[in-house]
Length: 445
Image (cartoon, one colour):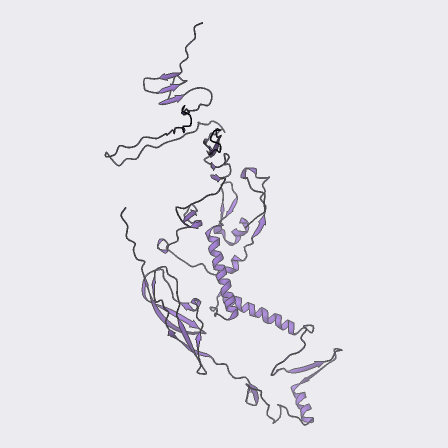
């Protein structure tokens, strides 16, 4: 029987080619009602590697103008209604035997909503979902992940002073920062399955609680849920909080003197008031457990002595003077002279402790090794020696730290910047120079 011819390839007058379609709308159109595959056939020679297939857009002609090459555009199918289409990328994992075909598996997927999955075909939760490890950078220890605004999240990120302006130190953060409450929690995974939360307990903060203290650290995601910036801001605040805590401890130990009306002075004052109150309460408690007290002199208005049964006898100075006078003894209330125990001396018929020597002045006896700085440097007091002179004419080399020195600023070049050293309320000064960062010459490629 004669067969009815079926057109398989059509070439229109405009050059459009159709395979299984008689009305190609593009330069090459594939027809049919099922999915099609463009396939590079295998080489028929045994033990021969497969041949590559390259798809390339057109390039500009050199020598005519400064022109860009043509874009290469990949499009998935047009959707209607709620339907979407995606791009799927498959590769074959390296085999082991060399004689068995390796199955092609999907390695990267781009969904219709723009979500990209690497190592997963269902990146439904975020714009980029990677199943596996990620490495960033070009060499060594560099590599940085930033927020959209360019703020560092993690890694070795740009932080040069020459890229920054309006630099203001973070201060007075400890009191509020310690009100943040870290917690452990579990996600409500079963109630929000589309977010693909894990089921293990994790550590973090509650956004609503953080917002009360630091609203600038809290944002909102695209679904209306609050977010917390766990990045560089919290790290820098942690550093400053540790510094302030260390300064508080140094102030308590007497290593540094708190600035008047500062948070550190408030902390030290409250600390010692609390200690005084607790010690006073403890000493006034009959059950404090004190058995013996050893001292060179005890001053009191009334002396009370009790026995094991709780019976108590108290005596005042006038009563004791009368008792001693009647017994033929001596007292400080009559014409007799008290006997003082060294180092106390008799002043106006009273045993008096010697006055402590006070610091009268300080002076630099050995200057710091580094007096010339470059913009961005930190203060270096290596080699600096400061000697104090006291009211009893004695001298002593004082302990100096960078917190005892004010006036240092390396943000901009300056000549003859004055630094002030303060010890025990006494000051002395020295000067330094800050030079600009030397320009780096460009190297021709």
